[in-house]
Length: 135
Image (cartoon, rainbow, N blue to C red; front, side, top):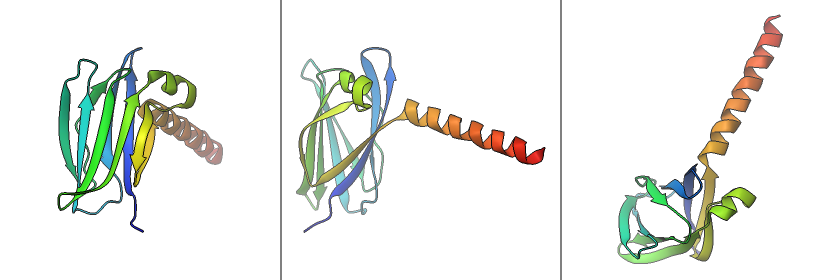
């Protein structure tokens, strides 16, 4: 049994309809090549290639668009996934991509705004704790 390809999808909302996302490899070896294909609502597709644990450029998406990710080693497809963009998911469960099909791939979706708020909250709690210790 082979190990799954591990990816993180970092996303951030920009209003009601547009979201910026980046695909990042996590804990993958340098021989892995990821092709990220974004198809917009007009049917125009753009592709990016990432190697190993690299990161894609920003991709601006909106509802009903698709994101396809192919993972290859030496031109052989070892994993793939297809997602549909759904901003409704972001509001209800904190995700942006609805999986249509996933094979041999683990994908984490991270809301950067939520992550930033958590970091700020933790820094505030830490600073409050430090002030208490100083007194």
